[in-house]
Length: 138
Image (cartoon, rainbow, N blue to C red; front, side, top):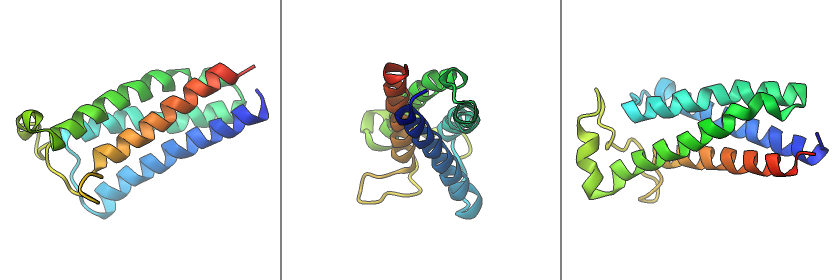
């Protein structure tokens, strides 16, 4: 594994760590109760810390192979969840999700930055980095 690929792998792992601790900060410190779609995103994000951490420690991208599928699925779930918050025709779908409505917005920085958008950003960074690593791993 080249040094450039190792640096991108570290960045990918760090992104998953920041996203994981960010979600834990929102729920455990800020007392935001996660909705159903938030839980799905957590289920897809948390294992990435281990997968990419092991991959980094062993210097072998094969250990993080499932990360590509999980981050891709995370992009889809986060996109749908963001749509439930911002698109009128999807708002109704989010109303009966669970204890907390998937359409609710705990944060809304600048009128568009919500928790699902933060999740989407982390997943898309991880997905793009993983694709880059696959292409450049020699």
